[in-house]
Image 1 (cartoon, rainbow, N blue to C red):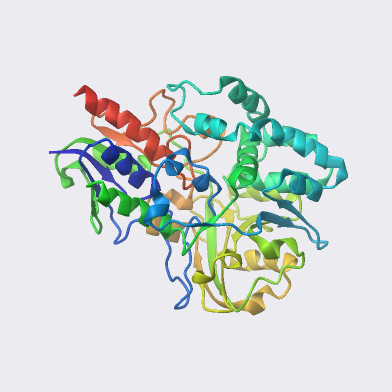
Image 2 (image 1 turned 135 degrees about the horizontal axis):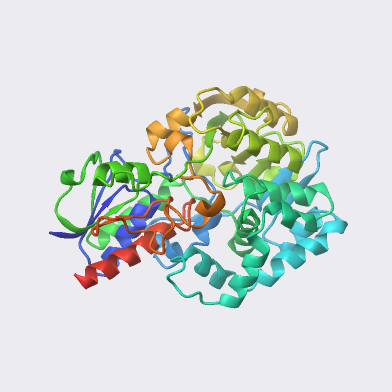
Length: 469
C-alpha cells in the first residue's frame, strides 16, 4: 500500500508529492493529461517554433515562494530570467508608470506628488519580506506567525479595500498601476483585502522581480517532476480519475483539483456546495513578426505589461465581468512578452505574446476584437505584427484544465471571505469529511498562482495524519 496518492500534476500537486517524498513517504501521482503541468505548461499553440504558456507566464509568486525556494529546482533545469523591468503600465499619452526592482525608480515613475507616498507604503514591509511572505502563505490560523507584529501591520494596511489604500495617491499613474496589480486576481477594486493583493505583487517585484522561466512555464513543472522521480516517487499520465476506486490503495489521497471535482470523485455530496467560482478569462496567444510596437519606451523592456487607460476604466472592466455579467467594452489586459529576455521562445526575430482579459464565468463570446482594440491604443500597428493567434475563452480553458471551472483560472472567486478562507470556513482547509482525503489545489490557501504553497501546506496536513496512523 502506498502512503499517498496525488491526483493532478499541477504545481501544487507536484509540490505536495515532493514534500511527502522528501520525508520518506511512498508517493504516486496520477494526471489525466499526457504531460504534467496543470497551469504551468508550455506548448506550440500557433506556429512551429513558437512556444507559448497556455496559462501562467510570469512568476512573481513562484520566485518568492518559500516552498520553491527550499527545493533544488535549479538543479533540475529551472532558470529564472529577469527582464529589465518586471512590469510597465503605459498610458494613452505615450508615458508609462513602472514596477521596478528599485523602489525609488518605481516611485519616480508616479510623479513627485506620489513618490513619497509610495515609498512610505512599501518600505516598512520590504526589509521583512521573506518572513512576511512565509507568514501569509503558510498554514492559515493553525500556524503561529514568525513575525506577528509585521503581519498585523500588513493586515491594517491590506485588509481594507484597495480603493481605500489608493486614497494615499493623488495622481492617476500610481492609482492606475496599483489598480492593475489588484486586478491580477480578478477581484473588484472595492473588495475585502484587495489592498493586500496589490501590495503583495508590488513587494514581490521589489524583493525578487517578476521573472519568466527559461523555455516556458513547463520548466517549473518539469523540474518538480524530475525531483520527485529522484526521490522515488512515480508519475502516471493519461490517467483520468473518476472515482476513488480508480486509484491504488493508499493511506492518503491528495487532490490538486477543483472542490467540485473532488466532491464528485470522493463522494462528498454537497460538502462544497457554497464554494463560489469567479469571473473567467479570454486568453489569446500570439505569434508576432517582431516586438510589440509600444508607443511608450518602458513597456519595450518589461516582462509584463498591464493595459488599462486609468483606474476608472480598470474598475469598470472588473465590475462588468464579476458583477454585471457582461464582457467589458474596454477590457483590462494582463500581457506578458517573454521574448524580451528569453530568445528560446520563438524563431530569430520573432516573438510570442500572451494576453488575457476578464469575462463573466462561462462566457461563450469572442473578445478578440476588444482585446486588439485595446492593444492598438498603446501599441499602434500591433495587428500588423500578428502572424497567428490562438484564442481560448472560458469553455476552451475549462476543457483544457478542469480546475478552471467556467474559465476561472483562480480556481475559485478571490473575493469576500473566500479570499482568505477557502474552500470552506475552516481551521483545516486541506482536510475533508473523508479522513484519508485531502485537497491541495489553488482552491485552498494561499490561493491562485504558481507557487506550490497550497501543495506544501496540504502536505503538512497529510504527513501529520500519516504519523498518527
